[in-house]
Length: 249
Image 1 (tube, rainbow, N blue to C red):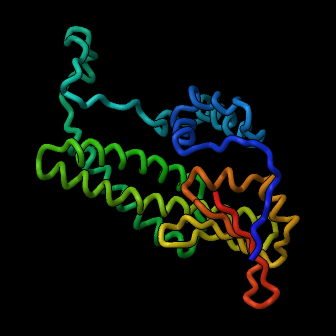
Image 2 (cartoon, one colour):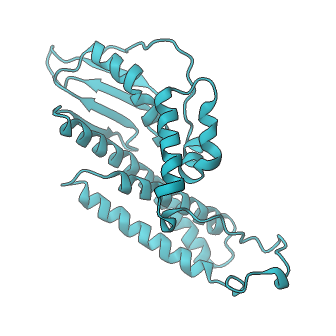
């Protein structure tokens, strides 16, 4: 098994926090991609998403602003409050329903992946689900007062790693479909207990092709923000003809 050495060019990785910021608030965070070290591809993708977010993304799909649920923080005077939002809202009931819907989507996606490729919409929704689960985990798991709230926080905490693993599986599935549509019989899968190993198997895999994947397509930069820690390129042969290149992310 060989370990491929890529060109030593100092590059910035899009960390998970920056990735989430660009996904949900690109108007602010997309500009961070102009810093030295980010690749042209990453910048193009970031600003294309910014344009989509501003002009084409339906308002109903945009994430809402965080709701201040801390009773210790003073709110605006009642006389200045919007009558439409001044009435108390049962956030716990809403969040309970949201967590249940996420749990159901997790099950539905699991069944769908058995026979169908995943879509960018599925991956985007799963990303939103992780954010919502994390918020519920903090709000109720760490600050919950009642037994029901603590139970919801515990449930949300248990779902976060499950949805995160599924995001990586769906990403692998969507990448495989791209190869298939372009006439390449490539198998892409997320391996390991936590699905943190991205395996790309192609019978014609070679060192020049691995170099192209790494330095022109920048597969590592796409996979790392999703939580992948290892990238494996292989020709799939188990015999002496087998060749494998492993890259730690």
